[in-house]
Each structure stands twice: as C-alpha cells, then as structure tokens.
Image (tube, one colour):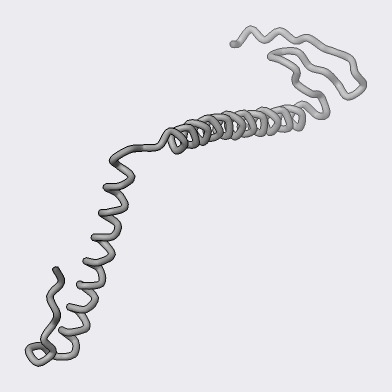
Length: 110
C-alpha cells in the first residue's frame, strides 16, 4: 500500500525528500520481513556455527592475553637485566651473572 506522490502539490526538494522516505520505508519493510523470517525458527546449523565461533573467540582471547602477559614479563626481565649491570634477575634476591654463576642476596628491607 504505497501512495504515489503528486508532483503538482510539492516542489522539487520536497519531492526528492518524500521519494527518499518511500525508498527507506521499502527497505525497512524488506529488512523487517527478513528478521521475522529469521526469528521464527533459528536453524540448528546457525546455532552450531555460533557456538563454534564462540569457542574460537574464547581461544583467541586466551592467546592474546597470554601473549600480552609474556611480553610484559619479558620486558620486565629486560629492565631488571639492565638495572643489574649484566646480571639477570631470576627471582627476588637471586641473581645470575652473565658467566653463569648464581648469587643469592638477602634483603631485609622487604
């Protein structure tokens, strides 16, 4: 039920605006019909694909998080290595020098 626009009652700009509204209305009706069709019965195949996608996204999130954590730890180790003049910090108070010897220091201020 679409009404036609009488061009004699409107100017050119109004006609163009009304024509665009009619086009938008047709497109919205088409989208509404497609959404109603999809909402009536979600297919098992679609549900399975969404479940598979959800699992992939969870795995991707875990990989990104672990990569970021690894980068932060590596960066912190680089900073600790530089601060100790070539001695790599293995753990709190334990230093490994570049020649492979391990030195243990006790810090009572912590």
